[in-house]
Amino acid sequence: MSSNRDLNPYEAPVAQTNVVPELTDERLAFSTEVTLGDLQRANTSPFRQALLILGICLEAFFVLISGLVALGLLAKFLRSGALTRSDVILVVLLSIIVLSLAVLIGMYFLRGRMLARRLPYLLGHTHGWLSPTTLCQSRTNAEVELNMEMVQSVRIQRDCLIIRFNPSPLVFDVIPMRAFERPEAVRALVSELNQRKTPVVNFFTDPRRLEEVNIPATEQIPNDAVLFSGHVTTDDIRESPVYRMLQRVIWYFLAIGIGFPAIVIGFGWSSFTWLTLTTLFVPWILFKAYRSSLGPLLKPDTPIRFSSGYLDGEMMCTYSFSDKSRVKWAHYQSMQTSESTISLELNGKMKLIILFARRQFASDADWNKAIETIRKAVPERN
Image (cartoon, rainbow, N blue to C red; front, side, top):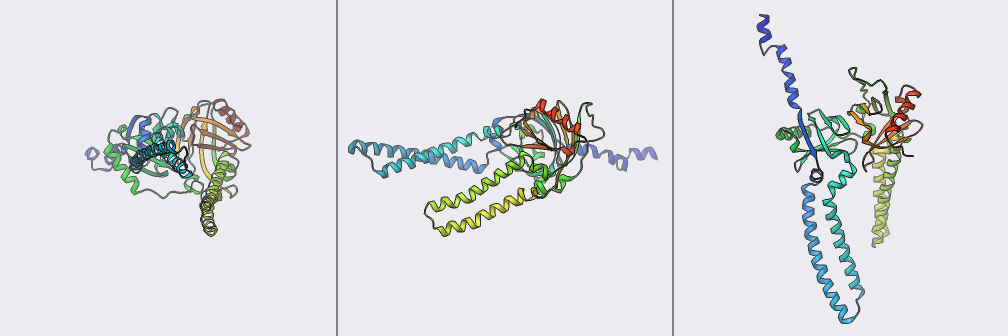
């Protein structure tokens, strides 16, 4: 009876083993070379395409009008030997319109290249797998396992899968649909992820990031590696380039909030209108900026993120709630140090920064060894 029970597929032991292929089937493998054309398509929505067509039509119309006006004014100049002030203003306005449309159309066709400059890691060979819970991806200098709970949005646009992550919608991944063997399963997974999508949580107040995720016991750590584990706090952020970047963003918002009403009054609106717009607009910008970044950072010694891992002369391995990664030093373009922090800036124009605190290292010797190890591989910025 026992042998018959073991062979019965409806009994518990065999049913348990059948879970494995079902889980594996959820992992949708992908492998491809991401090109500039892929980034161009991924960064171009149908709405932007419609705007492009409209812009090209307007450009053609204003070029034609400008040509006719230029011929008319040339004939007028040849007859009278002079042009009126209105003629000059008309020429200037038409020139501005034609040049502005030309620049906007040109920027549209350069969107892929501009994105590659901001996030160069998107280009090149990529392979891995996608499941309802995890995105596992390998690139030239990095292997990353991302928790899909941290996804802000996911969609398929022009045959490209676009996944945006917290903390910023500017941080995202692009995987062409040709990379998947089962694109219909990917579309079903995207639909499922959008249905169960969790609300976006502020990076600085997300309690999930405080969850302790330690190095697995099975991890093979190199003998010369430096280990780290612990929280990064608001005090650490305020001593890093991240805080200075946030301050600059706030100043930009203030400039827009004050500058916009100033431009409005410059075009002849009343002082009352300018005062009303300033009273409503500027406080709203300040409130949004304070709530999203500066407010949480002003609370002293408040933990905002836990991470553990190790680093050696070749790479850095990190474990946290949001991701598990193995990143080679070639993935970073610069480092900065202070009395209590190490800041690593990723390649590209996006200014993405990874921050480590001195308290995450067991001793001063480990802290100094970590700085020297990174300094040998990554250029230091003063």
